[in-house]
Image 1 (spheres, rainbow, N blue to C red):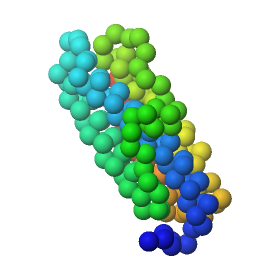
Image 2 (cartoon, helix red, strand yellow):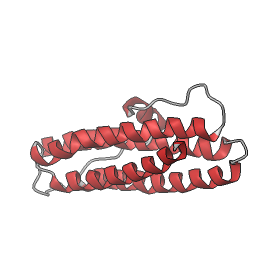
Image 3 (cartoon, rainbow, N blue to C red):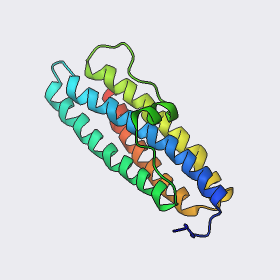
Length: 157
């Protein structure tokens, strides 16, 4: 059945395209956070193992909400590793130690990259594409990422 929510198909497609990129970024960040959870080493292992677990659980919820938002505006969410790697702005893990500070630094950079990507889409979603709902939705996601980034950044103080 046709999606009739007061936003043109062209505009819904443009929004879905950006949300698909966001979903890919979220998926890659989730995977990298899982990697940190599984592979962190050092004297702070237990605390960091639990910390990374709480972060990937949040990211799992975020990924699901982004995919559902794409579906709610009448498009299909990308759902393959290949599509995620083609769409993401992030890069896979590079060479590093398995110390918590190394993982934290890389994850923090990714959260900040996602925050910037979201911030550049808040106004266009509402103003250019007439989708105030998605604009509001990603503003909430931006706030979640800002809090997660703060939690990561606080390890360096």
